Length: 195
Image (cartoon, rainbow, N blue to C red):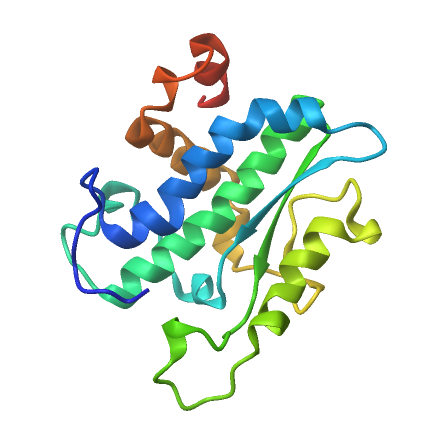
């Protein structure tokens, strides 16, 4: 979080690579298993952890690597906005597929961890920070409910741009290219998924 400009081992800007692309790839690699494990009465649940920072994020599709103008805060916020867009697009895809899978995004708040060791404002305990993720993962009220943003165990409106379906689709397509996702698994299925 808010690190100086540097790259992952794969050459991605670190915030975007670690906070977003890694989650995008892992979720897609596990998606077939998740689809097989969900049932009509008990959906498989995908929970993505974002941040309120997404509200100030700007997605630069022509510069997802922040090469033109690097700002630690801008890169971090973009990665967290990308997670929200990803989650909404993922929910659209699994719904269209008829899968028994839900995808939701949570904001844990500012949690008292090493990331915030030098701040002077009130933070949540790790247990308090985990509560919304746990709620999203096991709450009976959310059975079969996907495509929502949660904060303090409440449905909350994410930033307006996060509901832009064309932006969601374009980010998804670009993420497939960046992670070379069509090179894994059943190529036909992955190509359809990445359209």
